[in-house]
Length: 253
Image 1 (cartoon, rainbow, N blue to C red):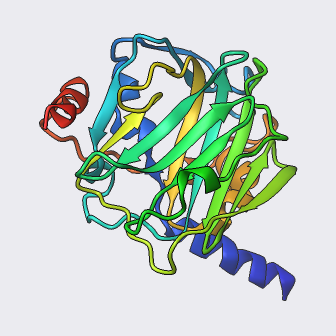
Image 2 (cartoon, rainbow, N blue to C red; image 1 turned 45 degrees about the vertical axis):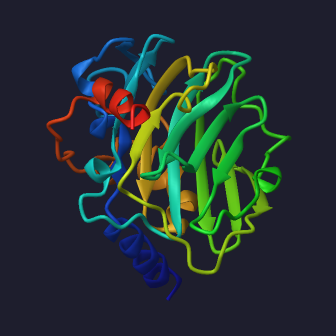
């Protein structure tokens, strides 16, 4: 019975197809400031070498219309953000920022010595002073980390390296809406001086808050396991607007 329940939970988790942010932002085409490098595992089982990751420098300017990530127009109300990342030691910067059509940041993940999860719904909730701050977590120590964030109802849980779990309240509205008519920015916030530097192997958004709890099993497993099919997200729908021109046009509105 327990095996059947596990299978059902796993099946429904995988049925929420991941949005691969790195693919949508065309990391595989090595835009300016991005280069390929060895990833989390230098010798993964059943592979011909190391995992593939990307080294990001401060010159990188990566953004895309959010519709490119969500062509159907619906950003999930409850979701998981999954990442395998190695920030530069001592850094504190936004890794992911999702803006609405008016230029207001709705979703954000700040990585560093004290990670922050930013969320602002259509009613302006929660207030900036109530954004979840994870003071006891440091992922800017120059090492690889697997970080999974589960957003469900009025709470957000961060799971670091498969075992360190911290839950914070998220004082948002009962029915939240994230506008997908704006842009998604990687590595910074609009007009922010702090930019992400480091390496990243995976950045997924999944419309299932339970996926965060299975990240190290089904999406980014240990090096003695092969890469599962679940880690391979869909090919992005490429917009005619280039990534670098997207943020420039958005600011100029």
